Length: 385
Image (cartoon, rainbow, N blue to C red; front, side, top):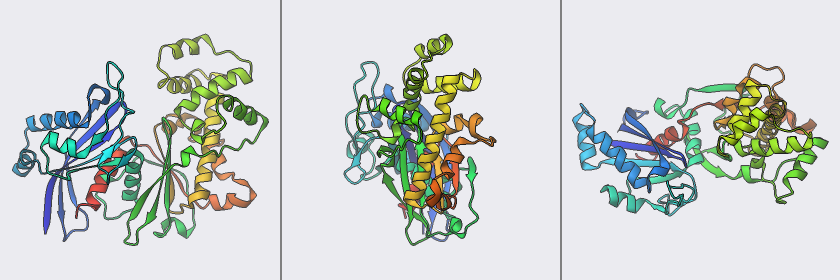
């Protein structure tokens, strides 16, 4: 028995909406489904009033393309389409509703209304139950599940992998061991995976990035903690392991060291939004060897490494602890091929009782902007039999 349909997967962020169109064929006699990439587009999210408009625009553009395969043309015409979207914000109603208020529309900055799959299906004239939502970091988790699934199609997996730490223990290939993931970006996302007994992994959401787990190890770090507590008593670890943390720590070190920002740094920061400020700080650390910015980068890598070590102890993911997110690859100039790699050193330094345990957990960076798309595709393949 075989089954074919068109598939749309999407990774919908507050800035960009990336969507991909594929042709899916599942045959029970084959272990791995056949998937063919057809088209993809990236749109500015805040120029649309909702997901329905984005998908309609994408479908219109696909319809105008020339497809040689008649079955693909018929699927588009007959709306034989499955859609899986990775979105930020809470999801409920059996993956059919999403609070997308974080998307701010141009030009007035008003937020998107709640997105309901039923409304989108009616708007696009799709068949009922054609569309579901995944949390954005949950989708990344499903890409990781595909990484360790020998039956997964290659389009669901990432090849952009950098191994930071390996372990020679047998647990690294043991399919009964968990997998975990942390990813620093605008915030600090987390998820973990457990084996489901069939050789695949089940994805579980986590709010590990929102825990109050920063433990200062020096007088300088105690001062940093006191600085953060001027404004609030509960300090989530993502306040120190995220993009916005760069701005916070730059302000702290300027005060702590009684050192003003250089005129060049001030000038460049004034030209950009708060969202782009972390990239400017990292650039000044790399290109200009700015002492304050270098201090920020090193503190970030140190605390990130310790946070990864905490995750290794929390989940004991002997099958692998993965790092995602766009920040760490952009800082490779500071940690890669560096004998004083602060990230790895801090990861492995977990005290006399637990350092040996953490050393048994492999640490891997995945530098791939398409993890959400690939995770959505994998989710569809394992839930559409």
